Length: 135
Image 1: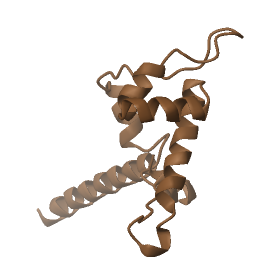
Image 2: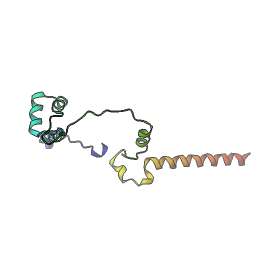
Image 3: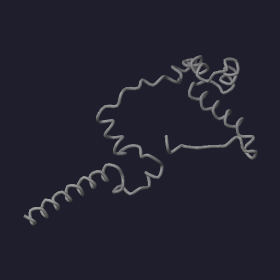
Image 4: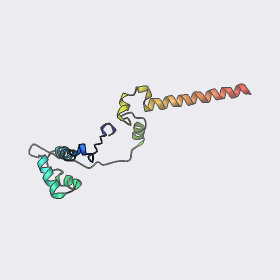
């Protein structure tokens, strides 16, 4: 999501200690979502060597002692329908960037399009009136 964009240049000498920290954070997040310990995730990842294959191997393997555990499932993506396209095109739910949350409502997508459409309509009416006056 655009509100979460972060870039850390690990190649900079000042950031030399960041790759292990990023890997540890990634391990904790994936382990949490798979409902396994970070240690179990790290061990499986070291054994398998692929994040995707590690996730696949651990899916559904979480804490089932207290009922169905959490896991990660593949998203079943569907082609967006007209309503989805309308919502996305008019920034009703998720603005293009974090700054969109701070824009006044009158400057956001749908209202701006309505105002632009109204402005075009007024312009057409004005031009028609001018043409009638010239006749």
